[in-house]
Every structure is written in structure tokens, then in C-alpha cells.
Length: 286
Image (cartoon, rainbow, N blue to C red; front, side, top):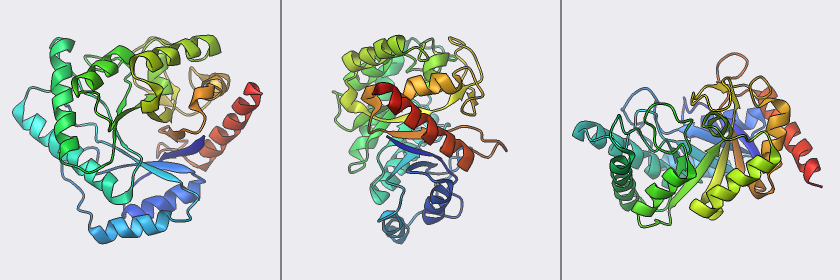
């Protein structure tokens, strides 16, 4: 189980890797472009080669890209769908260029339309983006369940994957905060086991390629996506230990997206705490 966090890509890909190394990360995540704008970051083949060289022998063993939050693959608006396609494809191209483990994507919001109408729209957008890229997977992230977001249950994620023809380059990323907020009691080992059993039946755990480790500012079933620093939220240190002790998570990259003590993202202290909780979780299994 690799521990790492989301870091800024300001200054370029190599600089992002250096930031992750300074935090003590074993894995890392970046945005492919500013999360608040549609303008893509123009990386060159030299940028990709430098990043790959930097990763060779680095303590950072894997890199993931988080697609920007503006993307909505469930939208029926032609302009938004076009911009979403451009940004998602851009993220996949960067993933191909640096050998990323995947592009993490929020599936989308139906904006009041029936879920059964939104799911084929998402699937079509994913299929098109995958056809225009080489090998990097798309990892659908489970959602906290606010508004009309798709992906709050394993069945919704499975439906999207089914509509792509069970495309081999689509995986999933499970977020601990989102699971709790969407009503899954992941602080109890028996209930967590049942939740993961459900994902195994619906999606298949061969598609589970990474985890997001975040505490939650809001209570079980709140449907609010509000991350807290590890140990400071509703999961707490014991809940996080329980989450990490799930044996089927062994070997997965675990990425923190916490605010950090200064609101600038995970710091070294949060990474070290996650590593300590990982070791305590492993000792529970023995």
C-alpha cells in the first residue's frame, strides 16, 4: 500500500514530482490543468521525457492525474460536452506521456435528468476519449451523493462501465470521505467488508486501481463532499485505520486530498500520519 497525496503541478511536471518527494510521498496525484479553467497546460514531449526520467529511481512509484472538476460527461449541453471531451482527452494524453496509473474522473451530474438518461451520455464521452488516447485508464470516482451526481453507488458506476461495453481501460477510485458521506459505514470492519463485497460483485475489484484517503467534515449519509484532515473528521484515526485494514486494499496507491494545516493541501505531517495509520492497520490484520 503506497501512501501519497495531491500536489501542485505549478512550475511543471518535474517540479510536481519534487514536491511529492519532499513530502515523503510514495505515490502522487496532480491536475492536468488548472481546476478552475478550461485552458489546457501545453506540455511537450521533452516535458514528458523529463518527468519519466525524474520518476526513474524516485521514491514516488506512481503518478495519477485528477481530471478537472469543470468536466461534466453527463451534460446534454453541446458546448459543455465539447469542453469536457477536450479536457478529459488532454488529461489522458498527459497520462500516456508520463506513464500515469490513471486519470481520476467524477462521472458527472445529470442536472435533474433521469439517471438512466445520464449514464449512456457518460459512457459515450468516456468511450470517445479512450478511442483518442493510447493506454492510460480512466478511473471513475465514487461520489458523496450531493445533488444529481452519478456514482454514489457501486451499481451506478457499474452501469456506466456496462454501457461502455465493459471497456478494459475503465477502472474505479474509491474515496473514504465520499463513501461515508454517501451512507456507507466504513468505520466498521464488517460493514466495510460488505461495501467492498458489493463493489466486487457490481464492478469487479480488478478495476479498483487507487484509493483517496480523506477524513470527512460531515456525518454519515450527509451527501456532502467536504474533506477534513486525517484524524480531525467523522472517520477519525480509528476509522481510517479500519478503512486501511481492509485486506483487499493491500498494494493499492492511497492518495490524500486533505486541506492540510494551512489549506494548501496535504503536508508532510499528514503523509507521515497516513503512513503510521497504515502500519497500525496492517498490524490489525495479523
